[in-house]
Image (cartoon, rainbow, N blue to C red; front, top):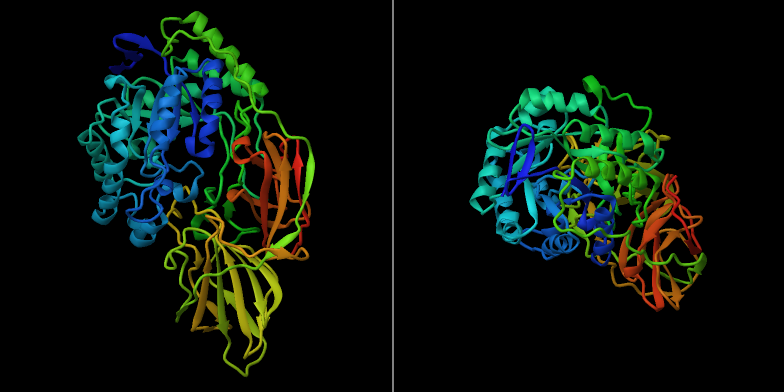
Length: 588
């Protein structure tokens, strides 16, 4: 049994320093788990931590998918000699779409999410009833490897509904969680005051100054062990923003200071991985003092890559940070062998990685029109959630009453990007929150908006937002009523009728990659503006010429010997003619 006091943890009565690294099973392919987890053990870590994204496992109410992945990941961690920390949410942040909350639920409960609202809690309870049995069976006091389970995530950054946290903690206990529960929050007084619970361990998250972080935690919870549940040794990226890096020596020094202060630690991230499909979230710079004066959009979608400048890069290869962290952990193990315990006595070497494929080029030679679903007629534009979509495209069509003069055309509540056509002619590209040239239209014109959802906000007061056109379309002050909405989901890849043709925007384009042997690769769409890339029907994610990311990581398990289908959907005004294989990532 895991116990703790102000000096640290003990497992079955013996001291244990928890040396953990975050690896999210949903940001890697199952075939990659053994390598990633073995690399953690080789670095000197004894524990792996993962979130659980509710929206991945219950994409529609009552429809559960991919539930076997979490227990399989925990079992593989045990095979690699690692204990585990599990953070089942229901909210996780994680730069993941909607912070892991299902869009169908947040569209229904709105701002009542993450509170003790009965409708929200009923959905939470139904999910935990399904998720927790496999987790409970793998607790360390039942012969498994799960050491700790989290109650919600960074709640002190969001709200103050103590009854909500109590309901979650009691629900975990009632469903059989017997290992210690914990909360995690930023190292500020107001966050720790609102985000913690009596009788539940408190931990802090930070990227620097561990002495100050632990001292604040000690003031709030003098009986709890010092634990940095998220040591931010790198950072994530947004589209159209610079790529984040952190000096490896500085990061290693902070790790050394965490350990010297007596702290347990979880490297966030040890291996970041990839926001496959439409999983990437977004952030939103909330205007101070209700100001609306922005020089650029306050909306910031997260890139497809979640490399995080972590010790293991997106492909799972060691970086300079990995080597320095391994040296720090080895020093600690030599000085404190009684604390730096492992699940077993193995001393593994760094595991082999697949080969990287040679550079190459695949021409796009076949093309298909967008296969929109049945149209929905409505007086006002329905949101994606009302159309049954989590993410994807919707083509909204309106008719301006005529005759009438040229007047401003305004799209209220665009989420998040749109191509505007007037009478079939492409006239503008619109982006949420960004100021652009005014658009005008004349009476009698047909207005068509191809709207694309990007990541839902994953942190802060905007969590739970809906997608599509959430306001309306105005011709000067006059709302345009009578909307035709045609949805197009992008996951799974829709059935398409390909035929030879020429590259063009807003069509699906396909090429064939023929391989004698498989391996990892990095795919780029030269000349592409903004769009999506599929490999053998699997959506790798979004690309965007705004950067910083240029290549999309394609792991070996997605490829096969022989013919491989590459499909591109370009939504900008470009017409890419090929996909390129590159031998190294280009993240900015």
